[in-house]
Image (cartoon, rainbow, N blue to C red):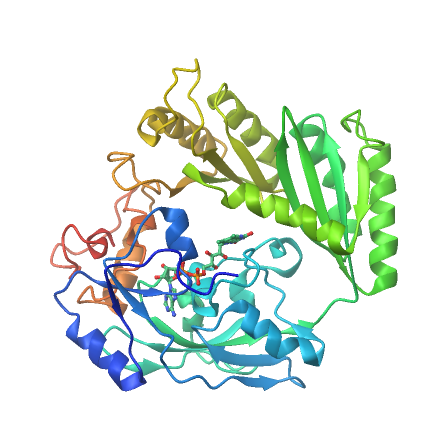
Length: 438
Ligand SMILES: Cc1cc2nc3c(=O)[nH]c(=O)nc-3n(C[C@H](O)[C@H](O)[C@H](O)COP(=O)(O)OP(=O)(O)OC[C@H]3O[C@@H](n4cnc5c(N)ncnc54)[C@H](O)[C@@H]3O)c2cc1C
């Protein structure tokens, strides 16, 4: 399990106390912008390095577990596997699987709002965050939310920080809801001839199986392989996964030539299936895209991707009940026609634009989630959006001096109907830096 960031920026600041962190933030005004850094895994996927990283590992750590209340407070720089080691002896866990075997930091996971495979059953990461201790870009400490299940007066400000990608505040401590570890896990694997057949067979299951926590689709030629995870009390998991298997065996469109097309696995067998999915999603890539639509439109989006990327080596990994399709163009793959040169992101720009157009025509979106710097020209990672001005205003409220650069390239520019924004309203961000885009 990697303990060091995957790659490091040239300059890394390591405050050893809250006071020093506040001072570093105040002194950063007018600089290139600081980026809080966890394990660096998201940065690696984006294909970027922050100009100046802020490493929090030297800050004092004081974890607080309340097993009776199912809550825990941990330093933001803790790895998820450290959190698991604290909880496991109590029969507890933090079930939001960030997908990297526990290498992500709690702060990085919360700031990136990575929900992992169990989002289907357990909801988004922000539902599990009770509160944070954060330091604002002007050095002030704030504690939005708290350490209890229901304790917020006014707006849920801590929820704004979940997914803020290091652009609004530095998370120092995070309070989380936790849960009893499930007694049993079963993974069901089924292969379908087409994405439409998969959707037709799977959509009724969700209403019937309370222990169904994850539903992922993986590209398998023209069809899809589906992984369903069932977790909870042993009897319920065995009954519901068995019933789902029977239901799917009756479904039309199962791919032939794979036994009866449906397999059940627990223990190491299940872990191997999920590890294989992780490797496909996070293998070396020249381009990563994420498209989202209403779940019922996923088969259509999938077919559109197959059409637009025809002839290219591409992989598709989707959250079936979430309508989110991750597209990976693996490193070293050849463009259509086998020109002999590996696919480069620049040659993929027309395909990305066409896919974005099609996703938007379905009422959805398409984001670039990883590409080498400069390789996509002016193509924005996220399409302009009518709420882009809100992102700018939020940034201006939290960080008027543009101290935190974070991952601003992911934010949408204002677009669509122009909101009433006073001409005098200025976002104090540095042109050309990440802060200049928000
Ligand atoms: C092998 C592998 C498998 C993965 N599988 C999945 C998966 O299945 N599903 C999924 O959703 N994700 C998955 N991920 C992504 C992974 O979960 C995220 O990369 C992770 O949650 C981010 O944590 P990090 O510590 O690496 O953050 P970093 O990459 O270091 O940072 C992420 C963002 O958070 C900001 N940030 C970091 N720390 C703080 C802080 N203390 N305060 C404020 N901002 C901060 C950074 O500036 C940056 O914008 C996988 C990653 C890997 C490497």
